[in-house]
Length: 362
Image 1 (cartoon, rainbow, N blue to C red):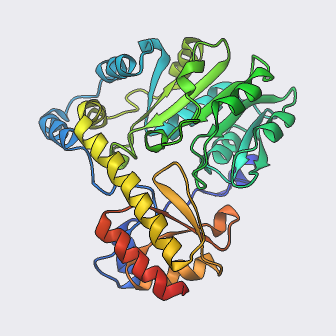
Image 2: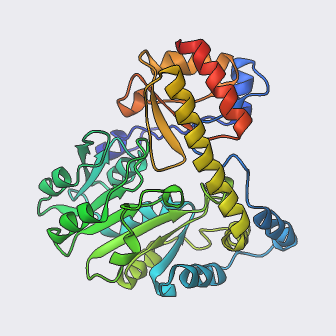
């Protein structure tokens, strides 16, 4: 069958997520593996979310609330914004998709840091627009260089804070200097998938800019700190004018009933959230100290993951670690051919990782 496909679609390299544990164990013939590759919550989902899901299972014959009424209002109260400022998505990456569909046409430009979240490039190209990539500077997003890339064709600027895969953050001073010179018609998207884990006191507080008169859009997710990656639920916080545009293109029932009730319950589960953050911070400190003792170079970050310089092929290290039942993420596809990225696991998983790494690279 012959079909006509736009060249900009053919130019897209598909996103390749980390493989599920079960698939990797089957493929490599390993058992009892641990996965520290996808920045997931090692504690599992919020217990209150699990209970809310159980209580909703008997209603799955009904369509979900298309507006997400109760979750939107709970988010607006918790964050301190109006309900009209909140848009729900099937993961925060669906909000990115809505933004590119609503704001970009063929030939427009969107500026993004590289390396960062790969879906920015894919979704911009899907709209027929042009991705303008700006390399990191010392593993950090180079806001000045991004600003210099702005042209009359620029419609969106993507910023990831903390950045993935480097874990670096942007300070308020840096962002103020950047935003001051951004034309008012450009939409600045701040992706905060890992914001709950930040310890830096200098980190940008994006919510302060929502009513600044600039087109600032903030993306957040329940996948990481709340342990709901499998539910696919995220949200955007933005000026009402932009939210109204996104709701014009948003698919009906884009977030499921289970996702909505799970997210709503997770917002009330402060004990779980505090336990998660404590586990991550303690785990990071333990891993940093352990790598110092092993004299292994690493790059501390502000998320639940960080980079390690293995000083050899990251792909080879990834494969050797797999043989020991430890799944990490090679950063070769992110242009860091000798770096791996790991997320914090349970304490016993962190110890197992360190022992495996020592056998592989030392």
